[in-house]
Amino acid sequence: MKPFGVGTKPYLFEKLAQPDKNGVSRWVSKTEFVEEYADLMFKNGADWCRASSTITKKYYVEFDKSVTPGNSVDRIRLNGFRDKEEWIGNQTIRADIKAYYQKERCVILGTSKPEVDHKNGWKNDSDVMNTTSQKCEDFQPLSKAANDAKRQFCKECRRTGKRYDAKKLGYPVSFYKGNEQHNGTESGCIGCFWFDPIEFRKHLFFKDSE
Image (cartoon, rainbow, N blue to C red; front, top):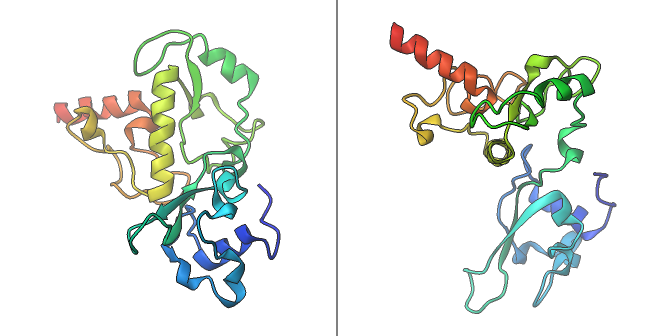
């Protein structure tokens, strides 16, 4: 998505809130809407950050009404980027790779006719995001249900920087490599269950045989 126009309300709020690399900002109080940011002030409804507004096409916007009595918005924050191709690059998968995996079965549920999933949920590996340098092992077959679940967990990981804990699925270990914190690099997903469930299970076997 193109940067917000200079001087527009989304531009002003983004400048004031200073979101981090994951699109998460501090809570910004309406009392800060003064001087340069005076145009952000509103009474009943914040027209510039409603569901159909420009800023909500880029960010998840949260409101806090707990500071003063009544039902008015007191504070606003940005709580992560929306999961759009604009912020994570071109997601095109080369035709031969798609054709190969669409004949396989989901690596989690074993069902046929899977979707083809980028193993790297952060999609920050330039080789994987380029159809000329993609390799078959960069992808895996997942059912729609499994792929939807992975997409949600990867989005949460990108927002918080914390990887999915496989113990929530009943596994005895959380990760086979690394820890809860994603390192932000292209190797940061390795060791997470969702990056490669087959490889994850292999490491459980190796662990048990030690």
